[in-house]
Amino acid sequence: MEMYNPAHPGAILKDGYFDELGLSVAAAALKLGVSRKTLYDLINCKSAVTPAMALKIEKAFNSSADFWLRLQTQYDLWHARRTVNLDNVQVICG
Image 1 (cartoon, rainbow, N blue to C red):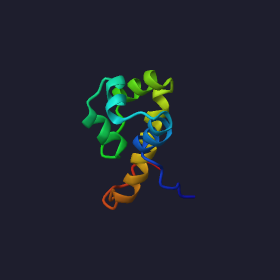
Image 2: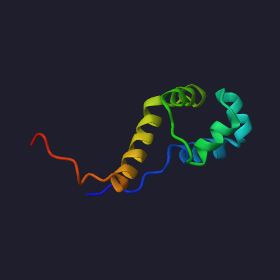
Image 3: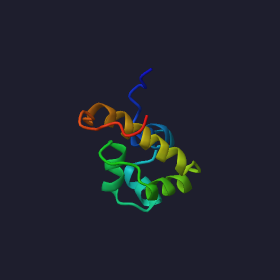
């Protein structure tokens, strides 16, 4: 069974938090202690949630850093499964 294309965590942050709370990128960036460009890139799916950013989101939005990092891992793995060529990889065990 193939997993669906997971949403980028930045899109979830924008749609589920910023839009719901009426936060602008500038206001949210200030509250998160990051630059507007850093936050803009994240919510526009141009950069990834890092452990440091996950911790900032955790504190600012009373959520779990683990949750944001799991979302990022799911997103990255789904895309890697479609782009990484494994033809030259040999099975070592199994």
